[in-house]
Image (tube, rainbow, N blue to C red; front, side, top):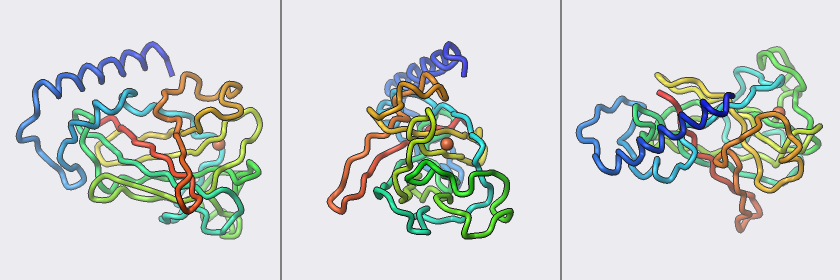
Amino acid sequence: MNQKKSLSRKGFLKTLGISLVAFPVVGCSVRNYQLSEDHASLQNNPCGLTDPAEEGPFFVANTAEVVNINYTNLPGIPIKVQGKVYGGKRGNTPLANVKIEIWHADREGVYRPTGSGDVTDYDSSEIALRGHVYTNAKGEYAFHSIRPGIYGSRRRHIHYKITAPQHRPLTTQTYWQAEKNNQRDSVDRNTEECRYIHFRKNQRGVEVGTFDIYLKA
Ligand SMILES: [Fe+2]
């Protein structure tokens, strides 16, 4: 992405966030997938709209709707990613029923399958660590999986494809803070800080992180 263009856009969003504080919106229209505006969301979001990142060669379409995408019980450190999806004209309206497709490598850095296409192109035994979830009535989503391995010169990462009515589709990736290969990875340079997830281990030993997503209407 053109960095100058990206910074300009983010600057605009920040300006918009300030104006929202000064002039609260009254009587906005609400569609069934859009909820009431959340005026705190833009103030708490230093990055503006979520940036895209390349899809890569291993996206498989039409995977299952499943909260735990490690349904084949592959070994690894359990993780949970949670967050909210925002959109609307001002970028601060939680969106319900947003489809979030997720895929990532296994503990050894291998995709299952190491290929693309449609899920029906493969035997079910070849499909793992892939699936999709929808945001709930509050715009919230969550999924469980295992921490992916690092392959090649890439950073440790998770892929997402996000689809919401009347919003620009977004394909992106998230990363781990302060990790091996973060500096070496030449894919998705100038990554905004909001796509580096800070994971914390909970009492059950699950590493939990938050990734809020801001879509362009
Ligand atoms: Fe990847």
